[in-house]
Structure formats: structure tokens, C-alpha cells
Image 1: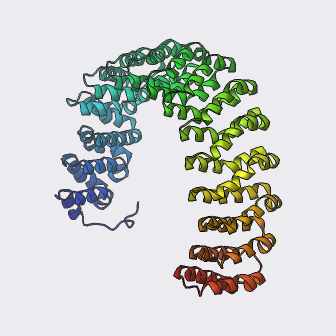
Image 2 (image 1 turned 180 degrees about the horizontal axis):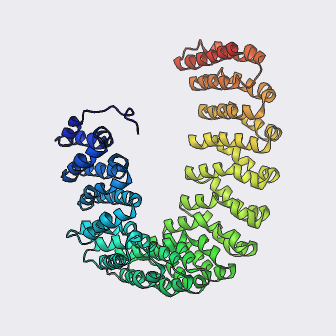
Length: 587
């Protein structure tokens, strides 16, 4: 790193700031540690700065956190990898402080430094550090120790490896639940570095201790370990050691542990393989889907499609579908919402006949759910079902429900339906769309809620893009233009918005012959809001129509508006005139 890229602070000042009472000054100084180190040079950094930091017993967590972070990237400033070990003492001190986030950052930096150290230095400096932390008097040091074993272990001589495994085993049985939690969290990382022979013996006995822990917070972390360890073991060992644990956990007395199993189930299935999943884990999953805690059912319902993909359709229909039917009328709206967000994905898994027979009734009941999120989750995934059962059946069974939702009293539901109309239109085709949904699209332009009217105008533009200008000229433009004489000015404004969106899609000819005259008529409106919106629309039409039309029709209209009594109308009219002048100058 060059000396130039940061202004060099006088070192004495920075060192003084490290001792200053003002926390902000101390923080700034810590964040500039690399500058101090560059100025001091590698030798003085090792002999003066690092010992100073080791003794710096700052009591502010923010300063300590910044220091832990800086030291993790400090190897280049102490003279490279051969001197990396000098960074260990200050990081060891930081690994034992009370504040969790400082300890976690110090452990992260220790791992970063340790992973770059030479093997001999790891044996001489890093492994003793791990042992000291693991034997620490305070639980904080022992918690941190769990996070660095996987760095120390691969380089250790065989006798030390045995000692490290035994130390980790002690941490798994520590008196403090926080230490056992840390041991459970890091067991997968440690196991990944251990030889296969010891994996089955030492690691599995540690794992069994953790799975039988009396604290549910430790057991639920062991659930995560199931999937990680399962990937390291041979399939037969996985079935022998991991599968019984998963089955027991799925009936654990703590709902948090069961929730964790439900959340991790797909990964656990991958670990044990398809055959044991079908025989052992299907009953466990069914239990979770019928759990008496709503949180567990939510987690299990969210995984229903992924789980069914592992099974064959017969098993899914026989075991999982009855539970899905129950969940679709669950007392908790969040369970129904979780189910609705994934259930459409079951259609491709089960195939056409089973979808029509079993899933369509469930889709319908969820589409009519009283809770808006449930309905939205179904609508957003309709295309997955369409691919399986075809458009005719989809339209007969689900379309009436969609039309009903289009008139729902919750405006957010209506909004979601509008947003999916172009998607539905592309799936249903133009003929079908005209029959069933065309009228709805016009109806939304006169909705009471502005967001709906705005979305309806956008929707018309997207439909015109989907079906082409000829179709739009026949089915959209005449009905839209009729509405410009609506007595309520807010609806007239919506039509102006629709015109400005449709013009680029319709092209110059239709814009000049059909849309522009309507806009010019609206410029004589008595409501100022309409008039300044006309000025905005005219400005958006300038690039679309010919220059002659701009000069003959648009400019005179804007000149008239620029003399309007209303200040806003004059402002937007002048802005549009300015825009015409800019176009003239550039051409």
C-alpha cells in the first residue's frame, strides 16, 4: 500500500488520541491504525504499536470492536506472514471481553490471521492460544475457543490433535449453556477438519451429548449440526447416527427445537438420502405439519413443495396431501399464508390428474381466504398451475374467484390482481382475455383509490404492449377516450395519465388522430389540476408526434395555458414550451 493514499497524521497525535477521554477521537485513531503502522514501519509496529494495543484496556465496546476488526487485516503491516503471530496477544485479550459482538469479531480476525500463518507458527503460537482460551476461567474465553479449533486442528501433531479433540469434548459438556451453545454452533466446522476414523467415534459422542442437552437453546443448534455432519458421514453411518436424532427432535418437548427441525428438514433429507426419507422422515414431517404450535406448522408448511419433490407422487398424495388440506383451513392466517406461498409448486410434482382432483379445491379455498396475503400468494404463482393443467381448466375453476378478487373490498388485493393481469393475459391469450377480463380493466380506471386507478392506467399500457396497437385501438382506446367527459376531475386525470402511457405504444399516427384531440379538449377544462396535467401530457407527446403537429397544435395550446390565471398551470406550460424549444435547437 502506498504511503500517499492517506494523509499521514503525526504519530504522537494518534497515539495520544488512543488515550483520549473522547470516545470519537479514540475510534478515529483506531480506524487509522493502518496509517500509524505504515508511518512507524514494520519493525516499530511489532515492537511498539502491537504491545501498546495489547495493554490498551479501553472499556468502550465500540473502540474494542473497531480494534478487533482492524487487527484481522494487519498482517501486511507487521512484516508479513512470518510475523503474523505478534497479532495474537491483543486478539486473545479481545476474545475474552464481555461484549459478544467484540468477541465474535476477535474470533473472526483470529481465524483470518490463523488461516494465513505458517504451520510451524500455528504449532508454536496459535495452538497454545486455543488451549489457553479453552481453559479460560471466564466463560467468555471458552465461548471464543470453540470458534478457532477448526483453524488449529489440521496443523497439529497427532498427540496434540488428540488433546484438542478431548478439549472440545469438555467444552461440549461445559457447565455454562453459552459455552455448550458455542460448541454446538461450531461443531460442523470442527468436524470438517477431523479424520474419518475419529469422526464416527469422538465427534459423534460429542454430538450425542449436545442432542441430549437439557437446554433447548443447545439442542436447537444441534439440529443445524445434523445436516452438516450428515454430509460428512457415509450414508449408512448417517442413517445409523443422524436419522434417529432427527426423528427424536421432531417430537422434542420444546417447540423451538421442533421449529428448527421443520425449517431444516429439506437439508436433513438430503443428508440421509431418499430411501430413509420415505420410510422414517415422512411420519416425522406429518407430525410437524400437525404440530400444536403455529410457528412449527408455518415452518413445515413453507417446506411442503420441496419435501414432496423428494418423494414419489403416490407417497405425497397418500401422506402429505391430507395434511395440506387441513392446513388450508388452519386457524392461523400465517400458516395458510405460508402454505399459499408454496402450494402452487406442488402442481408440477403431483401431475395433472392429482392437481385437478386434489389441489384445485385447495387453491380455490385459499383464493377465497379472508386474509389478503393468502390470496395474493396464490395469485402470484398461477402460472405454475397453468403449465400443468392447461388454460381451459384453469379458467373454469379459478377465474370466477379471480374476478371476485378484482372487486375485493381491500384495495391492496385489487392492486395485486391488476399487477398480475398482464401475466394472466399472456397466459390466457387474447380471445379469452376479451371475454372475461376486458371489462374489469376499464372498471378499475374509475376505482375510488388513486393507486388502483394509476395501476389500471399502467395495466392498459402493458396490455397494449402484449396484444399490439391494433387490438388496443379496438378494445382499449375508444372506451378510455369516452371517460374523459366523466364529471369527476380525478377520473379525468386518470384518463390523461392513461393517454400519456398509451401514446408511445400506439405510435404517432393514432396519437395524432385519436389521442391528441382529446388532450387538447381537456386543456379547456375548468379545473387547474386537469390543465397542468394536460401541459405535462403534451410535453410527453412532443417526441412521439411530428414537428409540424407540435407547431400547429401543441405549441398554441401550451401558449394559451402559459397565460392561465393559475400559477401551477403557467409553470408546467412554460416547462413544456421550453422542452419544445430545446428539441428545436437540438434538431
